[in-house]
Image (tube, rainbow, N blue to C red; front, top):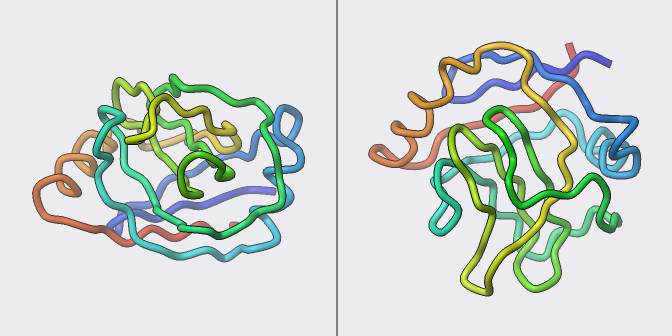
Length: 136
């Protein structure tokens, strides 16, 4: 299944990491199309995130990391902090005010990585940006 992600009007191609995170991918695919707002992270470094409060995806940890590479998207399924989706655009050490977190790496951007720092700066300095996930 092809995946298109649009952030602040810029389109990215992406792939689901279905072999490494099958339950997370299936839970997220069931919610497509998914639209929300990204804001800049507070503790994690160069990333944007979608705060999802007490939203439950019904998954545990799989293919989890605290150090995603630029273009990797994580789902933190909740626990010591709220549920969230994080997109790294630079150096990241995933954390919250509660301490280090690990999220499920379930999507990887396959195009447009060079645009990510611009999106990160725009989110930091201009505020929340729209993000949409949909199949293509």
